[in-house]
Image: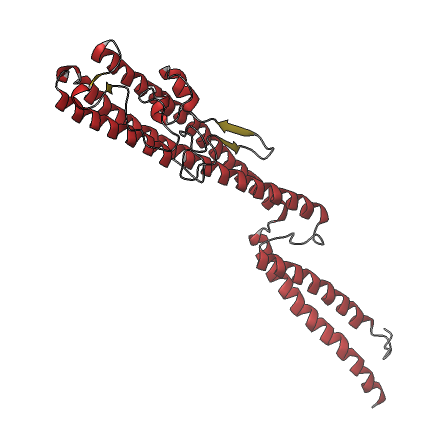
Length: 313
């Protein structure tokens, strides 16, 4: 064996081994601290690039899911309003059913008229208040008061930009009730009032006409025709709740699908970048041991040069 004070081959080998162990140990410690085996492009350009793209899809799907939640709230608010209006219409039917029994009694008819006008106001107020961030599916126009900016709603259902639209229900209500002309308010659309100003409470109804001693049943056909008027209105609002239920079901299904999509994307990204912590833990222990042994080996190699001194004693 050649002994040299200029070249210590054992020390060089020990140093190279220790340096390599140090690099591996640093990478392992980073994986343990971040939980990722690929945290930068330097770790794996391909995996990092694909993971970054998937990250964008995850963010996009999160936005879609938020939009679906918002759409669900709009539909829920509209459904609550529609159910409340049906409840009021049932009270209207109860009041109208007794009209013929009070025909000729102007005092009673006047009281019922005030009651009916109150119901008309409730219906229109509920419809105007069913507004969520400017969207109102029961309003007859964007001029219906209370900051209404849209009478329909379009929402995104998927990452590729697919959309669904819920149109305002005024047109279908008019079609179901046979109301004529352009509806000024929801009660106009329901065929219960006519000529109302958009955003203003109605002051009359289509069940009674006149005032004071001249108040009487409206139209022809008597009480039966007036009851049919209310029944048509209830049917129209029931159809609205049915359509809202269908939309709510679709949104719920798309929300569930969207959440599953987000979970799948997260899992795909994790498969590319997440570290196996049990494996990294075992590797960390092994490298720490190798580092300690490397330091000891380097120390021994460095001390070998001191043995040369014994040759000159």
